[in-house]
Each structure stands twice: as structure tokens, then as C-alpha cells.
Amino acid sequence: MTKYYIWLQLCLNFGNSNIADIMDRFSTPENLYNAAKAEIKASGLFTPGEFKRISSTDLSRAEEIIDTCKKSDIEIITYGSQEYPFCLSVIENPPLVLYVKGKLPDFDNIPSVAVVGPRKVSDFGKRAAFSLSYRLAMAGMIVVSGGAMGCDTYAHAGALKAQGVTALVMGCGILSKYLPENEAMRKAVCERGCLISEYPPDTEPTRYTFPIRNRIMSAFSNGTVVIEAGEKSGALITARHALEQGRDVFVIPHSPEDKSFLGSNALLRDGAKPLLDASDIFGEYISRFPDKIDIARAYSNKILPDHKTDNIYAEKENEKENIQIKTEIKKQNTRTVKQHKAQNAGSEKQNTEKTPLKEKKEKIFDESLSFEAKMVYNHLDKQKFLPEEIRDTGLSNGQIMSALTELEMEFLIRAVPGGFYEKC
Image 1 (tube, one colour):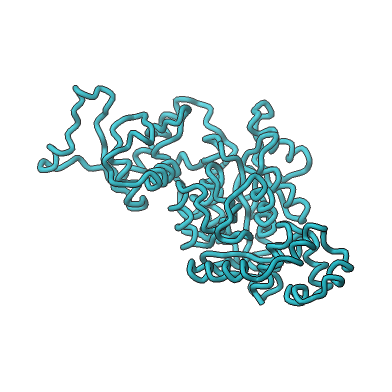
Image 2 (cartoon, rainbow, N blue to C red):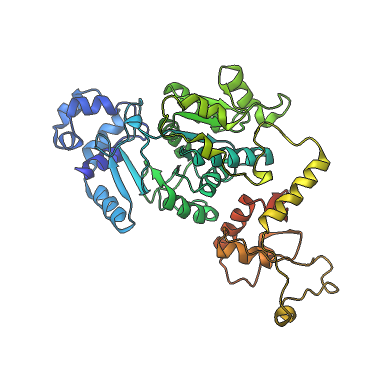
């Protein structure tokens, strides 16, 4: 039966709004596959292009996809099956097939929140996405996001830091090489939640696949949080889907003079719920999920200062305070910094006379960091550097970029204009 669902998905456009009507008319994709062309055409449910594909497409490609999924440990969940989330089945355009790597969370019984924002997110947005997702995950809620660079990455990172459940809804196939620098994060998500896509595993992203994907993120979620959004931000698409699906939309307020928040402030003007603290979300859903949301646990641990202050709208206006906070972050993130032993001093000694830009290096042994991230950080010998300047580590370019992303998520380094990074 599965192959017929995949076959039909390949014949239709993704995001097709006639799925329910097609199922009502033919009961199953297998019945449609075996129906006479005259009956299919007479139904009036298909465009000329769809009818042509239905008439000419066999099951071979669907069978190839099933074989790929078996080899890659990817679960296939079909529309109408027991495993298919009810919250997704009731939207206007549910996907016929879901491809899942990891364990699909129980979206129908556990509260979940989508956290969205731009790829080029502000430092404030990074802190807010990380800290909010951390609090939500600590409380037992599912954090949903899209796995892109920027806001999505910090949302997943916050949930993972809390050892919570997070779902990454992809705008391409699960086996796509899109964003190799986030490969390590995707592997971590699989261990704490799952990767989800409606696209066959080897599907590469296009400009159209991401906006279509957004309806799934909002459908899985009781509410969607817009961390920040410019006038034409893709986060607004997710917010629009959420509103159309009868879900809540939360927005962090910001200065109306900041163009990076024109879109999100417009949502507030049009009735979105202001979000000043994670408690605004807890208060919205605690009565519906009293046994699923643990507010006390959400606030049981302190988040590193630069990840958040409890009021996520409160920005650091005082430059002196900023310097103090960065000093505290460095102390917390480099908890176990050791000077080299005498026997290792020769191999790790800095030649500052020959390379005046080099600075004295501090080693980091943070157990929460991956081996690659610690190796890259310990290899850095400049305050400001380009990725291609990291040599002699034995790591591939992809591993180096993954390590840099992880270090940025931990606020040990930050991206600056010109393709550079600098230590925090």
C-alpha cells in the first residue's frame, strides 16, 4: 500500500489541497492507480498536468524510494495511517507521505511550539531563540523548527541543550547534502527527536520547497513564535499558515524603527500575541496540558547569561554591562581551562615575534562540545579569522564548518562581516 501513496505524491504537486476529496472519491491511492482513465478524468479532481502524470507514471520510482528508505533507516508514514499525526491530517493540504528519521514525537498529545526567524538573525534573536527553546524543552514541550542557519539553528540548539525533544522539518529530502555545516546538528536532532520531510529522501531544495514545507511546521505546533522577521521574511509564511490553521502566533516586540522587525511588528499590529517571556506560552497552554508542562522544571536551571536573561525582550543597552556579560560567558563556557604541562610546552608554544597577530591560546575542555569543536577552538590562534585559515587539524572542510557552527551556538565565537569569525 505504501508504494501507491508515494506514487500519488509524485504525481501531484506538493501541498495539494485536494487530498481529502481524492481519498473520499477513490478511498485509496491503489484504487486510483487501477481506475480507468475515463473515471479519473471525469472526477474533475486533477489538473491536466496531474492527469498526465497519473496516466503515465508507474510504480518503479516509488519502489526505489522505499528501498532507499530501508537502507537509510528512514520511516515512511502515509496519510490515514495510525502513525500519521491527526493535527496534520486536518489541515487543508496535508502531505500524503512523511519521511521520518528518528522518533516522531506525539504531536497530538504533547504541546509543541514552532520557533521561526531569519537566517541572518541578530545577536538578540540568537539569544531569544536559544533561551526560549531551552525553557520550552525543559518544560516538556516539543520545539519545532526548520534546521536552517540562523534562528532555526539556535532554536534546535536550545532544545538539545535542555536534552528535550525537537523536530526538524526539512525543506528538502532527508538525505540531501543541503547545509553540510549543520550535519552534526541534524544527527543530534535524530537522537532527541527526528528529521521530517514530505519530500523523497534524495530531493534537493529549491526556492519553492521551503515555503511549501512551512505549513507542516505550523500544523505540528499549538503555536508559532516569530523571533524576528523583516518585511519579506519567510517566517511570515509560517505565521500565515498558523493563522489559517487556527493556531496561535506569538511575536517578540521590538523597536518599530528597526527594519529587521518590520514584519514581526506588523503581526503584532494585526493581532498576534506579544511574547515577553516563556511564561506567556506556558500560561496559554497549561490548562490544556496540565500534566505535560512542567513550569518549575523549565526554570530550574540558569541559562548562560548571553543565551538569555529571563525577559527575552530586555536588550542590553549599557555597553559596560555588555562587556561584563561577555566576560561571564567566557568564564562559564571555558570552565576547565588549563595551561599546558611542561612536557607539552615546546609543541604548543606561540611564536609571537614571527606572527604578531597571534595571541596566547587558552585550551577548552568543555564536555558538552564535540571532539571536532574542541579541536577547532583549541587550534585558533587569532582573535579574528577566516574558516580557510584553520589548517593542520586533520578535519574536512565540512567538519570544520560544523565545528564553527557549534562553537557559534555555544557563544564561543561569532560571525562578523566579511566572512570572518571572532572569539567572544
